[in-house]
Length: 165
Image (cartoon, rainbow, N blue to C red; front, top):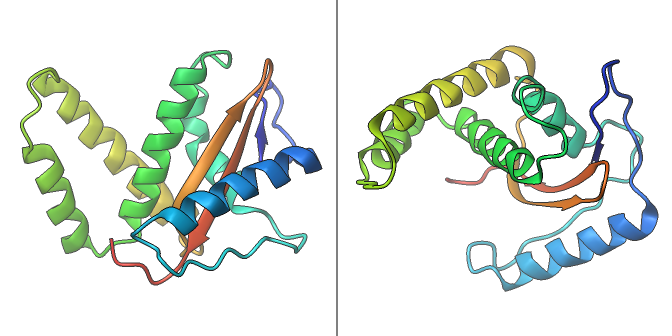
C-alpha cells in the first residue's frame, strides 16, 4: 500500500501492478527460504476489501504523523515498531508480558536505560490502540517489505493466523 502523507486525510491508493508483482515475488521467495514457515501458503488479496498493508498504515498513523515524510529511516523504524506492537497485541496478556520482559532484560550496552522505558511506553500505546480500534483484525504480520521512492513509500505485508510467537 502506498503511503504518501498529506495534510488532508489520505485516500487508499492502489499499488502500481508491476511494483505489486515485484514485492509479492520477493516476499514469496523469502518465505519459501525461511525455516520458520517451511510450508507457508501465500494468498494474494483479490477482494475489494481493505488490505492489511493499509490497515497497518492506519494503525501506525499517530507515529507516522510525528516524522518527516522524506525520512526513509524514520518511516521504516515506525513501521517496524508498529508491526511489532501489532503482533504483540495478538498474544495473551501473560505471553505478551513474558516476551516483553525477555526483551527488556537483555543487556544492551549502547542503548540508554531511558530508551527502553520510552520503547515500553510506545509499545503499550500501540497495544492499546490495536485493542481499541483494530480488535476485529486477528491476523499476524508474518513478513513485510517497504519500497521507497522519491515521494512515497509502498508497504506490502504477508499475514497469517494461528501462529505461535
